[in-house]
Image (cartoon, rainbow, N blue to C red; front, side, top):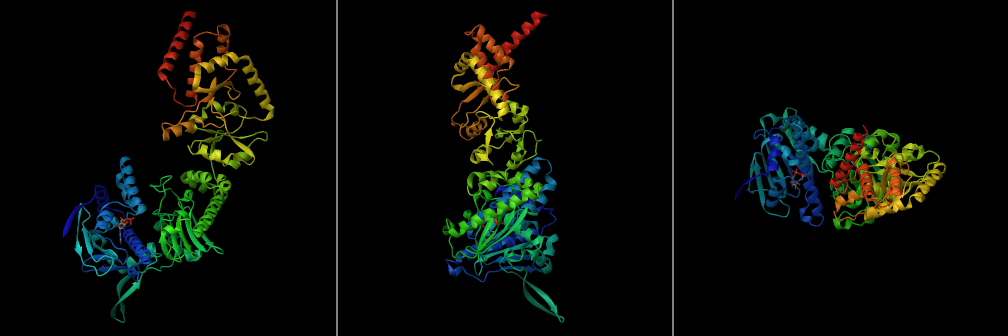
Amino acid sequence: MENNMQFKAEVQQLLQLMIHSVYSNKDIFIRELVANAADAIDKARFESLSKPEFAQKWEIRIDSDEKANTLAISDNGIGMNYDELVSDIGTIARSGTKAFIEAMKNAKKDGENAPAGPELIGQFGVGFYSSFMVADRVDIITRKAGSDKAWKWSSDGKEAYTIEEAQRDSQGTTIVMHMKEDARSYLDYWKVSSIIKKYSDFIEYPVMMRHTVKKDDKETVEDSTLNSMKAIWLRPESEVTAEEFNSFYTHLSGQVGEPLKRISYSAEGTSEFKALLFLPARAPFDFQFGERRTNGLHLYVRRVFITDNCPGLLPDYLRFVSGVVDSSDLPLNISREMLQDNPQILKINKNLAKRIISELTKMLENDREKYEQFYKEFGRLIKEGVHMDFANREKLQNLLLFETMNGPKGKLVTLKEYRDAMPALQQEIYYITGDSRETLETSPHLEILRKENYDVLFMTDPIDEWVISEIGTYDGKKLKSVNKGDVKFDESIQKELEEKTKKAADENKPLVELIKKALGTKVKDVRFSSRLTESACCLVSDEYDPSAYMQRVLKAMDRNAPNVARILELNPDHPLVVAMKKLYEKSPDNAKLPEFSEMLYDQALLAEGSPIPDPLLFTRRTASLMTLGMEKEASAE
Ligand code: ADP
């Protein structure tokens, strides 16, 4: 039986790139294939815990054949059956590869398609397909563990591939690459050996290769192990080179280059484990907030790989961390189900979270620039942590950063820094929420604060309001939204302001009632305010209601989210309010008054950047007022 099949369009696209690759560092194809081989052995080894017949003397083998011009990489791991060959090799499985294609498309959009490709190949690593950088034909001979059938997959990497039945003595997979003319150098033992040392030294199965050595003029064939197999996390840090750490980081995270921070951890006592963790420098392309990456943190038990999917190992909000945890306490034959709610895993989780938070705290204190770089990429997850991780909340809230009203755009401060800079008389920590610095800067809610020279934290991330309500008070000071409830000032001005608003309220009771009636359910209340110095009016949320911004966020998630009416606040000194009062005193039944009330409300919405309910009506009303005004000007001349 032989089957001819077409690659999916996405794969064809990728293969095109590989075939025409001008990427100078083609070496990585060895890293990718050896990693796949090690993964396949990991899987078989794990299965062999319950199916002893799968157990082998685990090894990866590289065979070079100068005459046939082929390089073959074999493993005795899990192997693939027919369906897996079709589904796993013919489609794009790994998220890194998907991100790679995405990045390629974006680069194309930006009109710089040529140079982006080659660089990106190295950055992402594109798995099996990278073999087509060096080979013009690739065969896969594979036999699934536990099956007696073997298959041969073959392709020139253009449009199609074939699958036919084949012979293979035992379980595992062999990838045979028919080398391109310009890639023959990869048949050389020394070259392969140095690539393995560089990228795959820590792979825990022996990578074997045969080569001829000349001894006393006699040629003999020797089988050598190319990798040291030393578990990098068990070696003293001083003995591991930066390059070794980096390639291990790449191996785990798929990210190339240096991690932002490396953490070695060794726990002794009630729980024994070692961990080697990496905080990435950048969020990967496919890093979705709320989505769990499964392959970041690998769990080993006494050097045996167990799983790269153990959600309990770290709190969810630390999902950007990659690394290895090697436990001495867990049983080797632990099943994935048993890992859930396991007390040892929970202990590891607690210890690691504490350590990561303390490293971040140190970074914030000692290397602000680096920390801010981290925060730009992953700050949102710290906020998620404040929300989720009650035990560490206090430490996590110290890791938050915000822009402020008085600081320039881009300058970030911690809650502590804000607190330390507060004037002695300031009663509360002020913040304001909204979609961007730009809309916040012009918000009428800030007028009095600006006048009194207070600073205000700017919160422009939808998650901020939740996080802040979680924090409540910081260092004895209440976190106070300036677009909610009443703002409390220090006594010296508070009294004066209160008196002024009280006086205005007393004098204008009937007018306020009229406005309230005109606006109906649109507002929760109408009152005079001390927070305005320039604008005529603004809308504030009641103390425990969601802010307007939060309401918009909720609405975006759920169209049926309820509208919570807000309070319309009036500036008693504003000419518009003064004129309205005059008109009311002269003719309380004037039909213009309800209409002007609605316009005031619309103005308050516009000033804070919210849409108004009936823009057409609003323009019609302003047009008629403008006409009036202009006619008056004209007749005066
Ligand atoms: P990734 O390894 O990230 O999944 P690849 O494109 O390299 O992406 O491989 C796709 C899939 O093919 C793998 O997930 C695995 O299921 C299968 N595969 C690749 N190489 C081997 C191998 N040596 N043994 C068994 N399965 C393999």
